[in-house]
Image 1: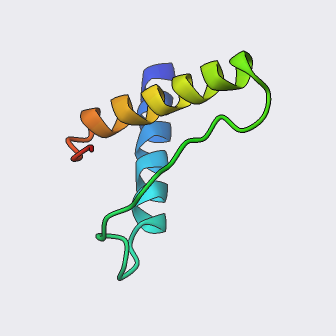
Image 2: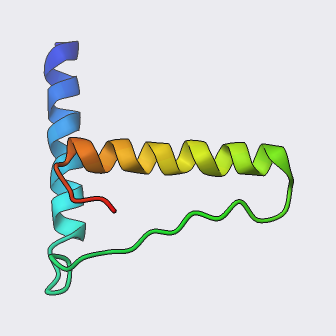
Length: 66
């Protein structure tokens, strides 16, 4: 039963994302910039981890990165 519930939850989440991204401009490109800002080394580390997370996500989705 848990496997079935998990599958339904994943399907619902996927449908939610598809619904959110169904506008006329949603097929267009997007730019993401990550800046460390103030905070020294820790903020630089966090920005690096965040950028790496976005890059891995984009690669899994077969999106073009630059």
